[in-house]
Image (tube, rainbow, N blue to C red; front, top):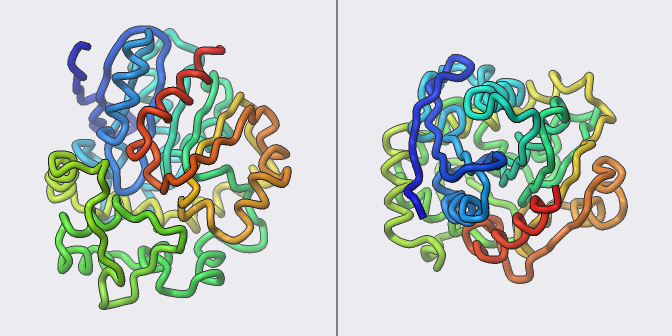
Length: 317
């Protein structure tokens, strides 16, 4: 297998760091929080060996992608994120009208919106961990999580600029990443103010020391503000998405999650996924896979199964 190549590509006012491997139909991999292009290394090599062009960027505010104004969360809306990817596709695949898209965590949320805003660019979609959530006209997402879990919920704690970054600095980048990437409880992640992590976990078996050090080196350089700004823009996203109230996803889709994924255990989510609501808004949903014993970072923890599931789906198109 040839070595993954790395490029800096000017897109949408950024210098976007992009990892690429292989030739053929393009598969765009979109990472979540607190991740990087690196989270998709196993899937990239797998699909590239089977005749695909794997592309995985460091998203706006992450890793080696530069140019985003970190001091302004309003520059991290879902429209900015989708806009970055449209510009990236124009740069790396100018002759491909539609591409395959694979997303995890925040990357799944971006992928849902990419498919909703620009279905003309998506051949098929595989999303992990975060299901499509129709817009609630009555309440924005931050208010919803506060109502469900209180002020200590991580999404609520992430809202005040500089606050969680100061706590993360006290804890240390390595400890923050080890705890977050190894978290495998179905319960919500909480950060009581001034107390740091209320739990401590051993490094997950899939997260080697080498892998952890890779993440640490990048986040020590970039900081956490870029990724946290995605959460700070949630309320603005809710306002901007008003024209898409009631809209859904009209591209062929596969959804994968883990039995112990914290998102899967948000009240009402299982009923929505399995009770017909998900299929109503994603009518071309081909399959929902719940991997027994797996947690949130399912693409890393169960890489072989995820590779097979992605390939089995995209090779149909």
